[in-house]
Length: 141
Length: 146
Image (cartoon, rainbow over all chains, first blue to last red; front, side, top):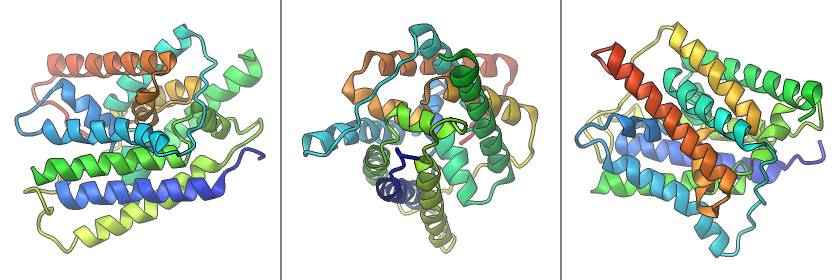
């Protein structure tokens, strides 16, 4: 467990929780990123601006943090392009079909004790660990 | 206008949380998913702190009839554990395990211009669009989930 970073994880998690609480209290919306982004494919009148604003904030924040002198972890993705494309397609299609991702089901859904979200979170955690095991310990990628 | 500003602040907070917790780095996530290697439990702690703070916000909201800048609380209405939920979660988990990106961190990392991040988000958008296309083909009532 040499890479465990408990303090930054707890601070970051608290900020994510504040974000989700704020979006619910102000907009009455679940802070699920796959839903916020994916629903733009089937836009409804009056339901677009807040989504775009949230996404702008999400993208700008890490850059602003880095500009302000914050330490940004170096992003390294060792996977091949074929794997990256496959992963992206699966994540995009799967989160829309399943109605949520790590934020929508994993944080917001669990926070309101939703049985659907608990089921989804247990499933994507399990298949995530299984995929990682096959990739890193069986195939050795 | 206030609702759009609030959404912007919420997005900024969300991105800051992902950055500070280092979740925008897929290596932190693959380190968590690799239970049988050098396990990194940071993601558990991110969720374990995010969930109660979110729950607190939801509890405060229960005293209100409507959100501060909007007319309704958009609570997910479905309660049934059906095949789209389970199949979708399984597919998502496989994709997540392959690279270590879920939608939030991938979008948040876009600003650093890593080509693999851009390729991932582009593919993710295609996957989401494919869902929306199929969904409008096969059903008259679009699913507006989370």
